[in-house]
Length: 501
View 1 (spheres, helix red, strand yellow):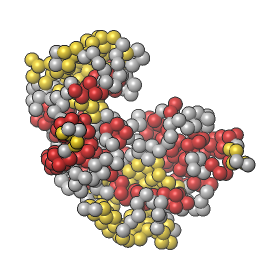
View 2 (cartoon, helix red, strand yellow):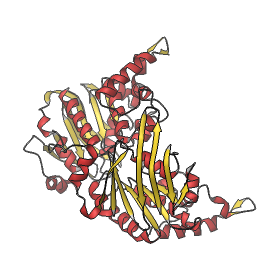
View 3 (cartoon, rainbow, N blue to C red):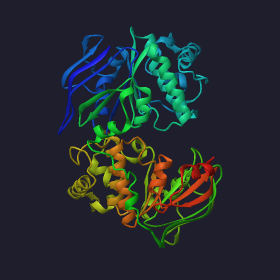
View 4 (tube, one colour):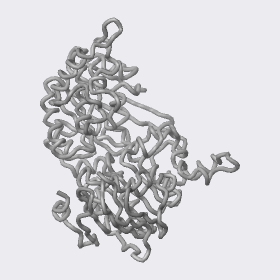
């Protein structure tokens, strides 16, 4: 029902897609995997009409088409559920579902809200979501917003003839296991009316949900495998072009930290409703991981240390000096860096170049008499692009157009180049492929060896155990248990879970 033949996409200095052949049949779930920068996002945008292909052909039901924008793709039954979500938080659920298609509810210039609410209930029923259509979207959980996104795409059923093609871009990246199970059941139920393209870095999930899997590397399809014949190891090898290092978390590189040098200390810090009585010390070269369930208080502790939230009690000291002012500016001046969970929202500035993003936190070092020294900014960016193997056409590339893994490297380069010696990592590998994760793990070990103190909120418990010198288990806003994580003597998953729940 949908096919690409020999599709090319070229950007200045980058051949993003090279003669890509891709097809999807009615009722089929097709997996799409590859490293960050392999071309997955570009291929998705070509299918969705956000990019126009430079060569080859696109077919829908055997007829040649060329989408000039996403609206044209939607008119042909192609919809997309975005990883970063496209919902507007201060609008209601029903306003988001029918955003851009409100005319059907307008009488004499006035929207019939009752009619819109009834139509929204019909769409929500398709995704088995029992909420009021008049609920403000910001009040929903991430999983609920994901289902509203899917309901929004399914409105195409009433507007187009034929079946739908729905693109799922990392739909499970921040969902809990039971939420992932529900989403997969829903996708399987919807196969009678839609085909799906499922993009994820979680290869076990791709194998579980998909019928066939396309593997991309450097803009080319290197393999197409049936899911029932696929295994994680072989797909990983094809994605990265090598065997994955069995020392995945670089435990052999873990060196003892300097327990005589305290970089950061919290004493009985509390913030009502978020955490209470938090006391910890971070030493030079130490990787301290906070583990806990969603909402346990881990992320709020990080944001307090950086200066985004003010504690109501206790004290914070950086390098022996009590912290009095709480702001991001104050944190940066004290050498504290923060790599946030939502890198596209808080980590980078899309529309600005790679070099502008890298020097954003240290512009005072690159200005003379109020005028920026752009030549030195660019030189710094070129140095870090080479040092971290960032895939960008040049330091002048738009940071918003880089893959997730390369954006994360730009954020890390911003702080490393600025001399920060306390780095807070909030889910630093979220949404990254296997190769990009290995690059982040290498950077964590390099920073630790250089004497930088790191507080980590990891994406998985295995990641926390593998990377950490020390683990603090946080439950209901309190530290329940401390674990020493020397190589060869690391706690088990059960040891952590016992205190987490």
